[in-house]
Image 1 (cartoon, rainbow, N blue to C red):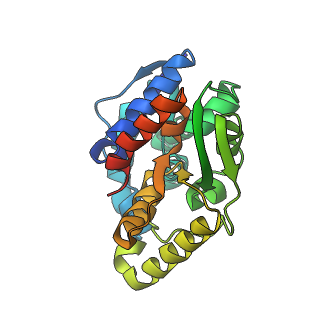
Image 2 (cartoon, one colour):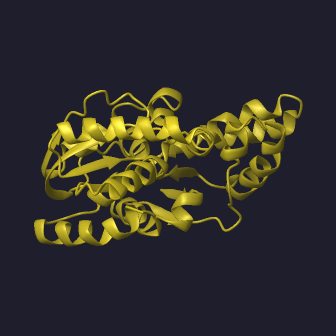
Length: 256
């Protein structure tokens, strides 16, 4: 099965190790992974800030970059959701709307693709730690994926997955919201961290780099010792010693 990796801006700039883990997991499951060179920003920052017309240009560029892909896999529920928004941009351009629909139909978030398309629930991962899962707003509420990440984590050997209180609450990132409404955003992420601490988890896991950057950055400023990892980093761990070493290395790039 041929898969094109949608790297995302944060992945390309800050989370290269996560992209490596995503690729290795997919290849281990029998996928042939390529990375289209023409991809850049999907336009989400502009779109979320109300500049819908200005998003058409980036959207067309991404459509061109991925139009020949069989499947598109993204390690971010937020960015995957953006591809599903594309058809709405081109109501006055039927040709581009059709192309946008084709892109949306073959775009999946990483865990969603593994469970829904490949039909795999156990990737053979092993990670010994007490962990809790932060579910991002875009992935659950807009993309509509609420189970795939839980399903995969529950099958990780050695992982003690505990529920996160008020897991449906936003972490406060919200794209440009965290910049424009910083005082409110800070209170939201502080509340999220309080709930994470209630679980006594050693690791908080997420499927959106933007949320992890926000939570991890705030925890570092507050001096909290909890590790912050992308779900791909857990799913690409294979044994206790290797998992701990991998987590320590990943922490350097995940917590800003």
